[in-house]
Image (cartoon, rainbow, N blue to C red):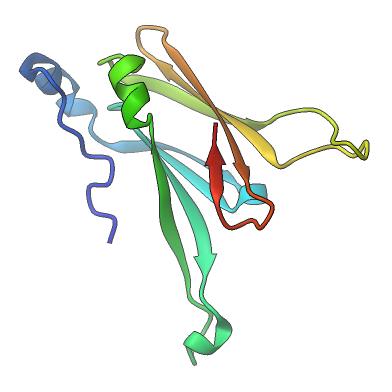
Length: 138
């Protein structure tokens, strides 16, 4: 099970004590085009879950649906370099606008924006590979 998947230990005890009261999952967004659930903690981390379905012959009762934890953001490199030790105020997701090479509207690349209390903004692009199996985060 995904128990404490966003739990983190902050580097300084003062920061740990300050942000401890924000340790709750209170933000989420669903991106059906990517089969993705985005869940955020006000403490500053975001988890990306993919909705998965086992083959129909796996269960006699009903199809089995579950979530797979794909990624936790900010990544380790971003957390050390960019992420401030202040609460996450909000997050937003939305499709990137534009056309693909055939002229059709592309809806397969989404932007995730994280806004922290000190006005730091982290931005990520989310998309699926051509096989729709792997999540790509840029």
